[in-house]
Image (cartoon, rainbow, N blue to C red; front, side, top):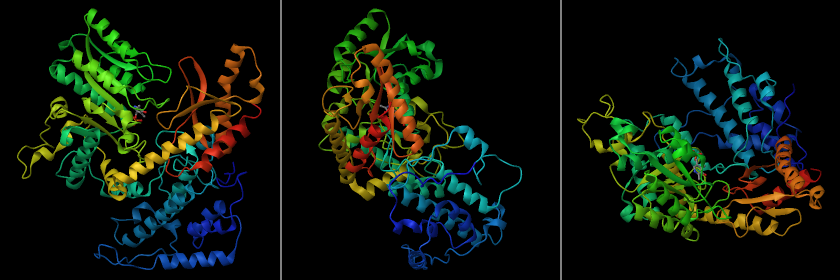
Length: 579
Ligand SMILES: *Cc1c(COP(=O)(O)O)cnc(C)c1O
């Protein structure tokens, strides 16, 4: 089937000055012609040549800032159809094709970046799995015995982006992690180029130190004295939460490490109905069993009711179980609710229970002087999960678990593998932090985050967070009294989550409550499907408890502004008109 142009749509026509995309994509070259078939729409020779000129100038060899090297390479008209991976470095004479190939890749990536921020570009060009599996024109996912030419490989790179979702687009609101941060992206490129592993100082000296410095800074933000404590970057909030349960168990029942769960009494964990499913997953994975995770009641806004916690702790003790761990969520995934940490901490202290704060989503608010009060009491936690890849816009993935007491992570997880963690190295081996992890190899997630912090300062993150919260207030004000909208919970939202139903005109007069419920349940999925087909914007929906499907708007994208919020609302109304 013919591949539709991702940029052709019923969106407003883009200004003609935009049309140089083809040039940037390499229209002057052979490969370019293949790519341009999709991208170019009209031909304005004047504009084109001026842009080509600009490009030629831009690629004039220049001294690198380091002063170490002249840039000897500029893009030329390389014919990639007769070149293969085997012709690239380390092949003999591979330097020139390698540089040409990489410059071409950079061109594809930078072009993608540029278009991501262009509101006349679609958020996605949706295809069903069977369509992508059958293969699009010039793009097949099948793996063959024979190598493909680099020309094809470049087309594959471009098409992979083309059929994906632009998560950095100003109108992408679907997930808690959105946005495309340029410094973070540069950080990822560098990280992949360095291609090392976090387990030892030996092979990642700079990254290991950056991790220590950054973790300390995060602990300072949490409010632990002098930023003391421990921590590690993990592959996501779910794993960070799992770490917290593991460490809590190690703290109270260290013999479980060697003897297994039979060495412990029946342990129970507590978390709210609105908490993230990863706490339940941790209970299953770590051998507690999901039935030993006790769910706490919340108020109408999704915040834990402390009295319910206390009652359930006492009840568990009465039954002879041992309450081990309480999770308080700072920024729940759907409602954006902040559990009352201080009141929960009082109960945990009284009963000697480990307190974990899951700030995967809300942790970022610690960077804001205006909003950090929502996490007050977090300094009393024994451990904290905080995902910079969510509210702080760090590229995926980047999540940390912070632990107040030093040594527990090491004690809990170390296996002292002799081939990695030799005690007799020439440097201070306490910097070989890898044995704290449950992993062996560990990806370098720190550099992009460190680089962003350096480039923006704490203030830059603060401004980003304040802006996102302002935008969500704008949305809340806009829809709370608007015809056809109903809020899922009353009152100003605490985080950027705005949960609402859109009630199409056909349902507004409906008296039969049950029929209305059933029909309303189908509205959000229908609108969402149409949204994805037209590719204009994306926002999530879900049911929650006894509430039928509603939209959950979340804002963490630094590219979004008020016009994008207006657009979303117009789009929901346009698509939902006839639901
Ligand atoms: C997203 C989220 C998680 C899980 O984080 P991942 O990085 O996706 O694993 C955990 N807790 C909360 C509250 C979240 O919103």
